[in-house]
Amino acid sequence: MSSLYEKNVKNRLKRSEGQIRGVLNMMEEEKDCKDVVTQLSAIRTSIDRAIGLIVAENLAQCLREESDEENSESIQEAINLIVRTR
Image (cartoon, rainbow, N blue to C red; front, side, top):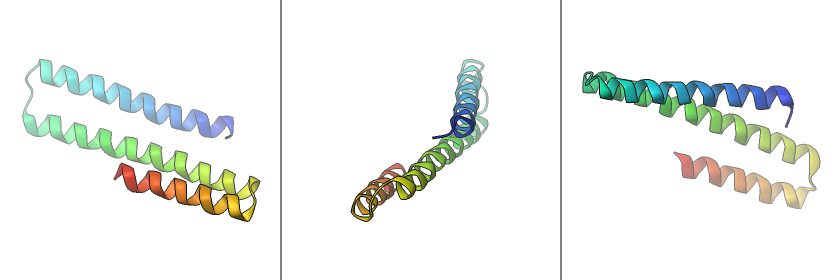
């Protein structure tokens, strides 16, 4: 995993972390439920994209490094991760 990729994923997760803090503040301030749910949906989308980046990089790395038999197992494992998260 390259340092640029790590930085990209970390930045995405830090934004999600900030969004979560924002939602907690909204709840403390008793903001409208619709606004809170909208922000939670945005957080979920952000985290799903981070997962996608991690899985995509994992697949690419597996394809570059492993034999065909190991690739099949690693690819199936990555697919299982995607299916479980949705």
